[in-house]
Length: 488
Ligand SMILES: Cc1ncc(COP(=O)(O)O)c(C=O)c1O
Image 1 (tube, helix red, strand yellow):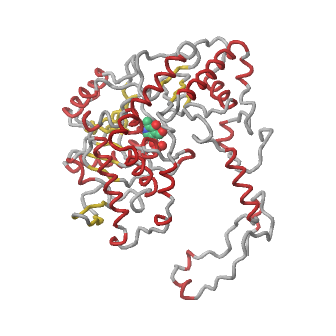
Image 2 (cartoon, helix red, strand yellow; image 1 turned 90 degrees about the horizontal axis):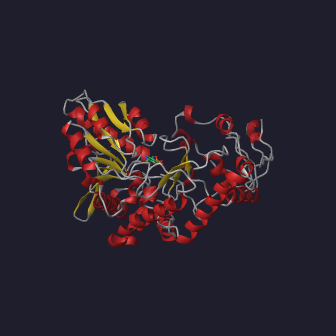
């Protein structure tokens, strides 16, 4: 019997079906395979809808979605680059759709070769010696990397090293991963240029420091020129350096974290190596290490003996951090992306991303407050409007951009400023797109002076206007309907 709570589905009509299938005859043998306490007593409460209802529902929702294929998506720290169709085409080949991790290894040779080759490509690109592709996201890569850092110290009997240095400009996942890993965060303040303050760093180095987490360029889009000195100081104090690879796009093919002195890193394949990643997934956060740490990489591992690939479980490893090997189809896209560009063209990504960010920065700096002078890398950060008299805030600017068909930049991050607007254009955007965006941002700055109410009440053209974000977070209403009035 279907429970009556099926009525919670707004489109559902009792008895309506999309398909009617013949009754599945379950033999006693099949049922006996499951423990009786795991067998459900009632049928699941599912929406009762026709195929047309379902198609309309999802088509209408998809039209309200916004992605890089709708328009410019300058979401700082997220590297929303265009994902070429060839990557998608390969990832959707039917040969890859029916793979199962419990298949015998002899039937998975091609897949294991892709794992192995991609891990090697990431090593060449990053300068770290060995990679595991198993983590499912950047933050998951961070956790895996920090577990490696912790175990490295513990295996040497050094249990005192429980503190991880994190600069105040870091992404929130850095301190969060540190805490989840059971270590303590030591925050250090950035200097007036938004970079690591060497004196502040020296002051916290001790025999309790397990390591430091850095992203370079940092979250202000600025390169840390003192990185070699930072690496020397941390290593001298017995700590390790962790590289948060979320900003790797700026350096791709040009500069390698391994050459800067980092011991552990993760790479966000879904950012730098082109997998669509709005809405939280799917992702992949491969974790890489230097030779000294490779025995600690998570299980299972993919190894080779000549042309034959096999799976290995290593007793020294931090353990298993994913159900099997990770998100295969994200690696596949990254693999195709890297092969399509080749060694020669990968080098062009960082410089073009950097050029685009500096182009925007230079054109907007009279209207939006730029605290850090000088070249930025792949993204630029403003601290709200130069003219603050109108009371127009960063949130209003972001909401007004939606009226022009742009995704808003990242706002109120990094936390170093009160009105952060973080713009990351990526190398896949043309000069025409950047010029149009700059013109709109300038118009918004002008409207802030002449017609601030227009901005304070924006957006005016989206299906849903400005929502009460606190209310929406606390009481999420999932519905297919457009609420013209905000529900109270
Ligand atoms: C600097 C930085 N580090 C780490 C992460 C976490 O990556 P993920 O969202 O893949 O978990 C992000 C995500 O935006 C980031 O910008």
